[in-house]
Amino acid sequence: MQRTLAPGLLVATPPLNDPNFAHALILLVAHGDEGALGLVVNGERKIAYVGDLLEQLALCDDGSKYREPVRLGGPVQTELGWIVYRPAKDSPREGEIKLSDECAVTQSREVLASIGRGEGPDGYQALLGYTGWAPGQLEEEIRQGAWLPMELDTSIVFEVPIDKRWKVAFEHAGVAPAAMMTSRRGMA
Image (cartoon, rainbow, N blue to C red):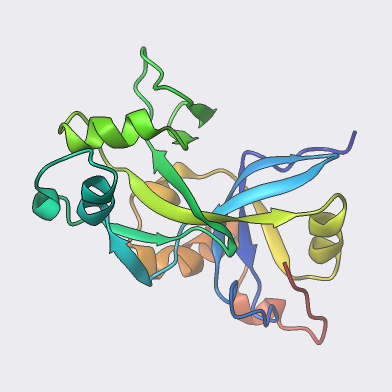
């Protein structure tokens, strides 16, 4: 078994020319012998609003008060929803995948219902789709210079404005994006 990179962050390096991942910051949820799974946590394009989703799923009557955006978490299975949030200290939510004391993800419909009832979780991010890698694929892309792996820093995920997360992640890694310029290219 190789050393796992999850939970962690992946920062797309400037040479990564795949339009799905240019300047992407990925929350790496799982990584192992079977491959890897992550969620883009700095996608700026809004697909919908949480209220629209809650209404479509009949989880609330008036979604207009839920104006948080639903963003693309990756190009794989874009019909699957994910919630990234700060977990409660003493009461895990249904289907919770706890990445750290300060970060969890879930695909649970019950968590969406909880949002529709106004019961949190607070500070959540709603995503559709994910990013996936076959066994060995992510490691090869890292060797090619497409990704800079980092330890999970929840302050970047939850506190930094979405349009600044990629740059701040590089700063936290102590690397200037210009220093990553290379002729090698990678694709996720």
